[in-house]
Length: 132
Image (tube, one colour):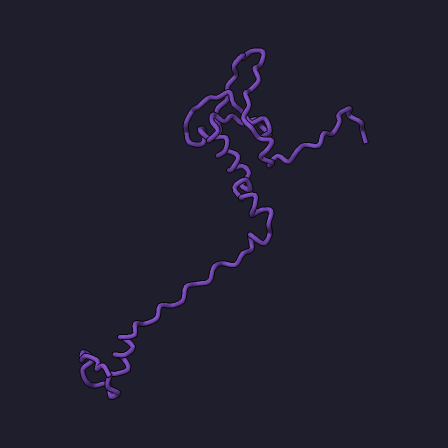
């Protein structure tokens, strides 16, 4: 093993939402207020330049507003959408679906009409049922 003189620093997981935040891009020697394109606006065919970036992301993406910041990170890390309570409790995610509603029962008058029809099949079905 070759010693390169660099120390290994344990990095937090890149998908951890706590380490991602908007920050101002640091000025360079040639540009005092350097700007980059907003990634989310670029996907929508808008040209917006901004000084705000996310330093925790690998390539320091430019993000013009908190809305673009959130949209970018939700697209990049889909696990951010899951609520923390459901992720912590495995039984909550495997809850059974609610029972189906029972089938509707026929009305009692229609049942009476069917039972009072003539057994031969001939005759008038339009006759009024007798109440007994």
